[in-house]
Amino acid sequence: MDEAVLVLRRERWNEALHVQADAFSEDQLIGHWAIGGRDRRERERRVRRLFELFKGTASFEHAEIHMLGDASASAIWLRPPGHFRQPLTEQLRLLLPMLALLGGRTARTLGLLTAMEKQHPTARDHWYLLGIAVRRDQQGRGAGSRLFRFGLDRVDSAGSPAYLEASSPRSVPLYESHGFRVLRVLDLPKGAPVVTAMWREPGSS
Image 1 (spheres, one colour):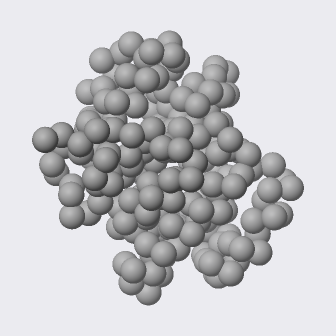
Image 2 (cartoon, one colour):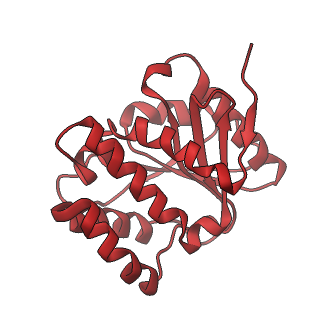
């Protein structure tokens, strides 16, 4: 039987963040290039802790987090205005915890986030898919597609456009099949994997 999709209360957000960490520990952009670590377990710990740090920032005031009932997949959406922005005061507050977590990878991770933030569209309010993830042992079973479709139905019900960054060229055709179109390949720090900015008008399919 298909698991229900849950819109999580804030006190359950960490469950969804654990799913994100499990999946993004093997992501070429986030897990390997930006955050790094001795092994997959350390990368997972670092990704989870980083999400937990950002959970307390102003950007997450607009967060809506979805998860399948069996905790096999989760999605983090930022409702309109849809911008992931870190004011200077928040950047300073996060600097020491990030240094303690990432050490020499801190500058690389901050450089990546800053570059993505600068190229984020601002002309129109939108829903921003910050991250969609499926646990590594559950991938290929349709969980991500179900969760993605649920989120897009909510976006369409609100009559809003949507934005995401595809961190793998292989995922671009999948997003295009759901109505997203390519805006640009992002200009990122030297050596970073290719990331494609994509936009979807409400009701597109």
